[in-house]
Length: 216
Length: 323
Image (cartoon, rainbow over all chains, first blue to last red; front, side, top):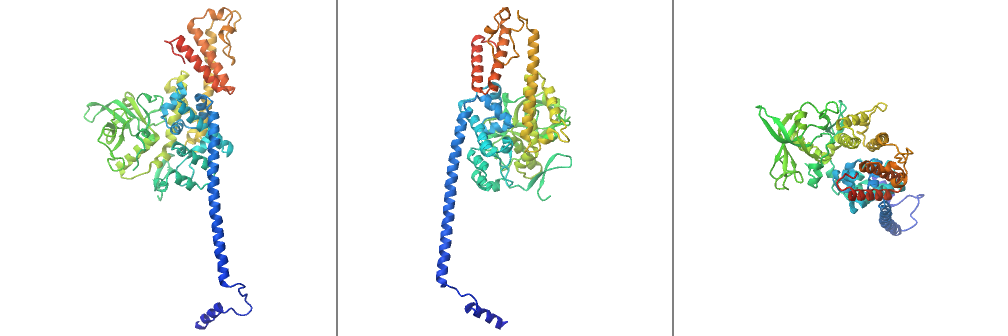
């Protein structure tokens, strides 16, 4: 055993004849590796900067496209806007949340009008966003998409994002490039803690939905 | 334990905004309810419905024979997260609550069993929002079991019931406009929701988040069909009631093209009508024209026409309803 170890030591320090010898001095190889690490690091950094820059430009372009559509939609009467939103299959309570008004206020708009200019624009904005997402990203059943959680890790939907003033994140989610965790973090940095639950919802033997601990 | 970001988020509707068409639901607050105490004495209280959404109705339509309600009265200021789990805070804008200093609260430990008749004899003054119901259930479970369940779990477990309540309300409002009684509209809606669609009903589909919007779309379509039937029936009734003119077709309410009465009715028909029947025909024609404009992608013009007509009506007939 001792002789083996001794042999191994010899092999490392003095390669036997027939094995390839380094063609360059070790110092040069180290320099090459350093350069490679530096240049790839620089490339990654540039790539990240380009990605961020392109992302920001895309966001801006998407925002402008959305605003243009909003201006177009704003020409429609509020009642027609509401009818279209209803026809898409949105729940009125969700529409009220996204418009930041009460449910009875939306009911009044539907029955007797009285929509202010600001709320008319909000209605047009929502419909324009639906147009933008559905047409540009081929998303079907748009109301259903708005109600679908953006990730398995938290019950946050595009409706939640929009209702809390993050239309930009709705667009990001529709683009589908960013990791949903990034979107959730942009929405709420404490989302992991906020949505942690030791419970799960399941259908019980009587057919009703029930709640139980996850390890039950 | 959780709290609302804004107290207003707790409420679906308050005071006069509470829509009678909305079915009684968990968290509804009803005032002037007569309660019979254990000693036989009758007291009048404001109460909140505590029964779980799934156990409120035995057959989906009729309320259960005995309903559990909690007494609502004023409270000291409440910290949502740090205790007083025996109550559900009801801060302003809840009627009778005075800001943070004097909120109302529903007390889980002061509860009564009452009959549906007792409950319905009172006046509903508040409906909780989905978040409000979830928070109430969270506090109630905490009070009775010391278990803290996140509101998101309650939401996921019960959202189909809240959804159904909203659909029923929408259906009843629309059908009441068609002259259908509220209770008949309620039954009609539930029949539609429970229609067997090959082993699955629309009510079942409401449990699937991905299918809810489709059920809402289908309901909108069904109501449009019923509205068309209603309009057609109304027109037939109006035609039958109307005196025929010399040509018999001077006013043609079935056409979707707007013909001003003065041009279309050059004979005696228009002249012989009473002001109220002229007004009815005029409004019917305006409704037709508005609908035609909307269908032909001219909603702005449709709205303008309606606004113009309403403005004209309010000036010409200030004491009459205009829409």
